Image 1: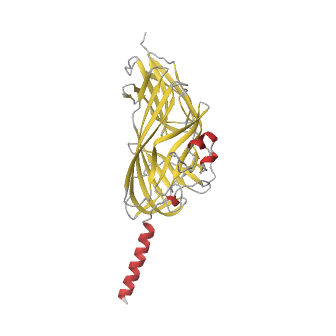
Image 2 (image 1 turned 30 degrees about the vertical axis):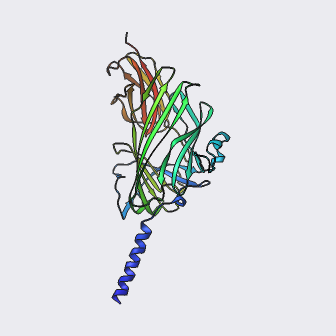
Length: 370
């Protein structure tokens, strides 16, 4: 009788363990026509996204939503004729996509503006990857294929597993507006835990994936005759995935220093303002005068309260920083940079403004003081 009881206990324990140690396959990730409501969580002190391990219990039940949006996945053919030709869902197409999502418009100062942006993905048994993006660049539709593709997950995902990939793309507009912009990215994934996750949306068996993403951007301005290799930007993505959940049940992003800059989680409808809106933090970014000798003023409008930091980058990649890093309210702001105090020699520079993880860049020409 004791042996029967012990056997029953072991079977129950095995059943629980098997159920908890889930694996993630293609069916558990997004597909065309899927729609998910997500909340943007308030960043509060004391959250440690690094905590993980086998059989772990993550309690994020006290997260406070500050805004919501709806993430919709559509068929690649529903984007535009130009984009669907490049990313057609065809076995012979190296940039094959079977879904797309709308992304936020963005700009590179006053030089280049991207609107009507779509990200294109391919979900297969082997991987879930981004194959490219499409956007109206200064009003002209431009499909941009990644080469190589950004492999977000190699499938199936299970604990413990690791993988890595390289990706990148280039925007060559030298013949039209004199700009060449290149992005290269490395991604390292580690399934570093499994267990039970609780958020305001519910409690779920989850697999935890830690992704370290390093992005290196370079910019060439034909009109000024020089280019920049921008300092690399490191992002840590902590994602909790569930069976048939589609998108991550919870995702927390941090910078290289570990400071949290974004919390997103699946949720139900809440009574919040700014629902279903994706708004860029910075608008109307300008520098004047430009060229400048002893000082220059950077002016911008914040669409929401933001943690703002700013630095200046030389053509050699040297960073001059520490002159702006603070929380700022929504509205229009202006900051005067004392170029003479910074001992900037005459030449070409980039001014980089970072708000809540979003990066905006403007060129600055420093002339000899009179």
